[in-house]
Length: 258
Image (cartoon, rainbow, N blue to C red):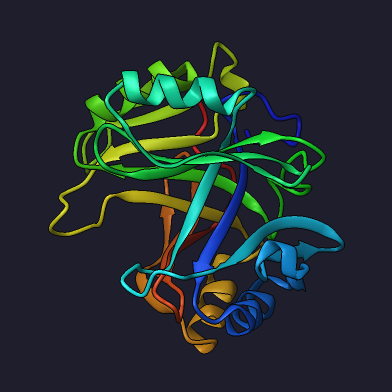
């Protein structure tokens, strides 16, 4: 499970790049009770999302007119420069070379060997999300990739992830965890047809009642991708697109267990 005792290779932060930050803040605030805190001009209008005062994510201003709004997942690294070299050696690409974000930390952005984007965060004064694995907070991440075998090999090389494979109707589902600590299992990897599902990282947020939260999301302007369903060894979940075009999922229950 995800914890705030972040280990290298664990999800540590997430943000949504979107053109209308106040509107996105209103949508997710209405759905999860998040409060939006716009930071100073030195961060370009970056907005921190909080629940009961604890950070659960952020909203980033989108500057590329050709880009589609999407949630970005950041993984913990102790050394962003070393991770950059590991990404290149494993066949990935560098989208954003390591850069300092004031004294908060150091960030970088990449594509994995199958073309899916992800980020890393090397903590400074900002240690990562303050609330995780809870109602209204990130509780699982899932990689949709055109090549599960290539992707799992890539992340093993870069972060030292190991896996437990589960059969599923859609094919093998690889449960990922950092190093040898299976109790820190944080996500899944599965093959998708790019013609049907865009390869990407998807985020899951915990909810107290999947059906009620799903109905609320639709009321607030979201579009259903998959209505609430019971999934064995996972819980009751639903998948949606927010009013801005970004995918996300909600889940009542625990992520798949080892």
